[in-house]
Length: 155
Image 1 (cartoon, rainbow, N blue to C red):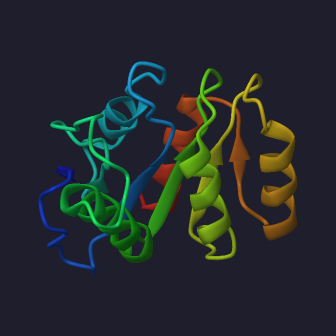
Image 2: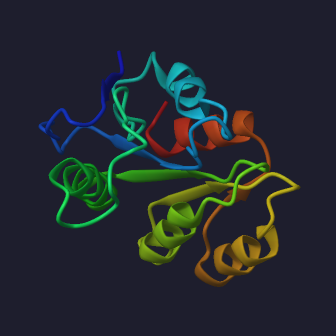
Image 3: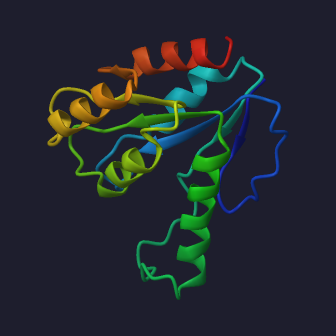
């Protein structure tokens, strides 16, 4: 059975077990809770799912390194990106996803990325070019992302 970790829970897990970091559009109120959908699709596997969608997110937090809760959140996400054996990335069509675009640049060369970018995402062309250049698998639907992740983690 899959284990799901969300911030602020420390990332304490066995690195020998496959892990999937769910990077992608959140933009509270704009992006669907795609992380729950993907997690549901992996629930029967022996995998650790790192879901950065914080249950108690406070939109009033100042986005500054000097704000401890914000810094903790970003640190959790960076550690998750680095430690995960697979990074799943989703660009929701109705979002801008600037942080996700940043994360794409951080992990494109890692060899552990799988991207889902449906038609309608405002910078789909940029995502396509980056994925093609670095050999990153690119799919257009969440169901395809789940299938690709299952293959990557041995399910």
